[in-house]
Length: 219
Image (cartoon, rainbow, N blue to C red; front, side, top):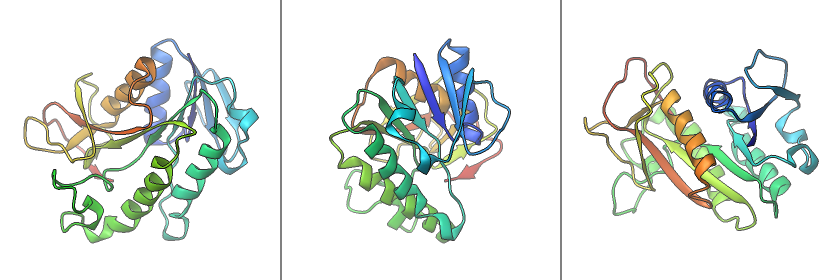
């Protein structure tokens, strides 16, 4: 399959590229500037400069875009609207690496995690921006999108076990009672979804089977 990875030089993007290449896919790394990559092809271009023509011919586009400063948080929504517009009406799948903030803490679905006391104040601006991006995407019926929410603890240095569980809109715990997933296992989930073609126009959340955290980050 032909797969493009936007933000291919970031932590999650790098592992998605690696996973895809190791599975034998033809991968194009899309980055703002030159960086080492395992992808067979590179496209140096800002995400907002990407055109419909740039993204044509791919079976899937993985969006690993990130913006972290207060003045740039709105770009989460803005860039996702731009990508959805570029892919509107095409067969190319758009798989978005999102955050846990828009998940619900429990099955009552009365309040999202980002608005609950469980979300630390320092993470709320980013989580809110990413939730707004998801809200802009989930109303689109003209794009073959899938939004992937990692667990609450996104472990950048965790091992690849190949074992994870998919859930839906409710924050799910693993066998150890924790909400965590390694970047490597998350990348495996992304590729599994691309290869299976499942969960189009759905949000899925990804959590490990058992707890294995060593170096942890909240998203």
